[in-house]
Image (cartoon, rainbow, N blue to C red; front, side):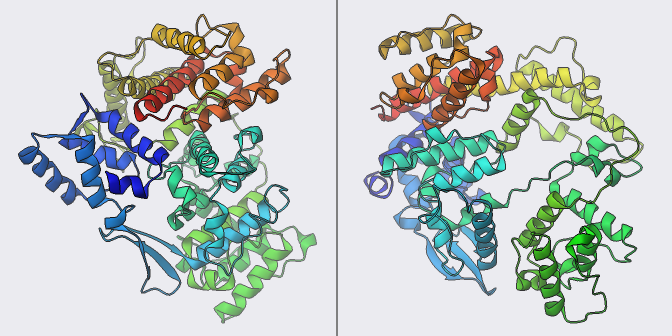
Length: 582
């Protein structure tokens, strides 16, 4: 353990302890939970290694591990400590860098990807006064420049807000006179905010961002396809608009690309973002088809035989459209799939060139509740658990039996909900198959609530589920211990609308954490919303994994308010156990 303390900060050790405590009973974990703890802490261990460890623990340690036992094994297997230090190596493919550990774990990224995403970040954040000079511009010829720029968390907070405006309240970002603790707070805010907008960050910790780990370049590659009225034109004869929008972004972009090629009368089609675009012929046709004529984009150069020359012409046209982002000539010619995918996504978002359909398009705008649950589900890492996957019918389905197989799956989902003691009276598998939003949201809320309370139960080392009333009692006791005057009577208490009690609770958990000069009295809706935005960000900053939105606090949505207080209760227990309360 001494070696680990030399390698990791106290905060990182506290996070390790928190991961361990999630699975511990009486200060020990079972052998079969070792892999889960490692994974929660950002380490994926090979299956054969896990089997060997479980066998050794069963034989030598009676099947259980203390925290000291765990840290000893962690030190031998981790990619992050002395025995598994990263060493730089150049891949056999030119321009690909590897971060390789002695245990064999690798994360690779290409210089091209680094340059592409650096150029994009420079473009979208170039006018931000907090980033100019110190963080931007990122130098394309300096491999470490991108990773150094994300180190203090400020740039990543800004990038999250560019993707989903208002996610991070700027008042919560530490910007001046930063020390190691301020930086860690920023990165904790980054990770919990990223989860809140649906990013899957299971294997990424705050320390990874602080250290500027190169494999984090994947965080920049998330796609956002902006909806447009004409997207209904991409729907095939045998599908609905809802089915189209459930497809992965890559599939929708390929559908759109081929639609435009067909509209242009071009004979070729694309099935990928690598080989099929590397000669630039399809790109040449696409850009001419979607660009407004007043931009003077050149007509397709179908007869050009030199891929490099044609790629240059394509990117010149993209420049006229203000869409020369992500890719360079060699990225097109080499068929760098990740960068070309980002390039096409950018084209789609700026020039969809899809005329609105004559028929009425159904209103499929998601509600705030739907958005919350979607982001929660997207951010979750998949783990084995209560589902017996041998009972699940997996696609592709045969046409004649498709509906029956899907109904069987939906019925099984209801059966599992009953095992979890969810309230599913009047809800059947057919309701899920039919897409009954009200009933589906009812199940999703109960699932999210159960997930939150299970984490809380483990942090509290309780052998019984935590009741709502217990959370209310804890909130008021904590407020009293912190010398605060605010109290709540329930999760429906109208005083919650000002968020003052949330600020007081955060400040009771971490004394001195809230800057009360930034908090207003909440006398009108604008002030209440401003407070709520700041409160949500500050809660995430102390480690609360909140999916609730500021409007949920402002409007006192009891279901979501419960998750806010439950998450903060879990953070408090974790900090107390780790000895990190200050």
